[in-house]
Image 1 (cartoon, rainbow, N blue to C red):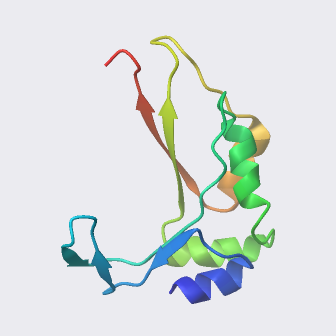
Image 2 (image 1 turned 30 degrees about the vertical axis):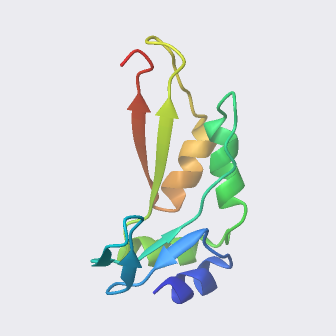
Length: 118
């Protein structure tokens, strides 16, 4: 699966695995991957710039929306983001352009938001 996705997206993942692949954990235990995955990581930025990170990732991959439609019908593409807030009442905004780019590709946005006071 990862090789097929790389060929379709015209890009290489930061990390990938095949369903059934043996994964060696840090403690030395081995487990079997229940699913395959294809992951691409962006450059960390401080202060945060999620919009730039979204386009950093998308600009490395095919712009052909028919390829994205094919992939989103077969798999579950998502953009996972860990958001570390500077304060309890901090905010984050994305432009319509970024949201449209994700939507056109069938990519869901998954935000894990961390409160610095906890």
